[in-house]
Image (cartoon, rainbow, N blue to C red; front, side):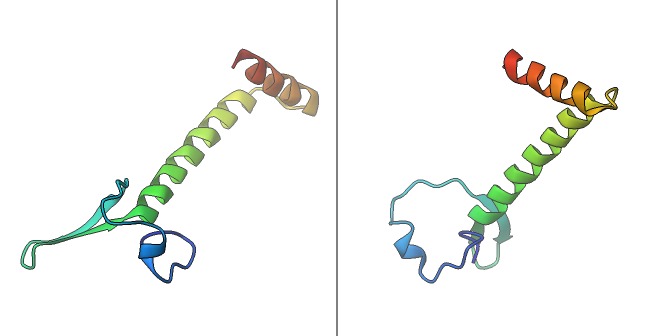
Length: 82
């Protein structure tokens, strides 16, 4: 199922005709004039980009810190700045 990571028996229980959704195009069949969409692929792509961003921020903040106290102070400073 391309609706969710969880098992979905019937998509009609989650969405009704006319509902607006955000999805990723995963296949275009020009011969049969069919477009396949995936909500799951969109969610996974967004999650992957968020994890990469978080990892980059974490490594940049912790690159010069070597002890636990310095790491905690940097984390608190980031939290207070937000």
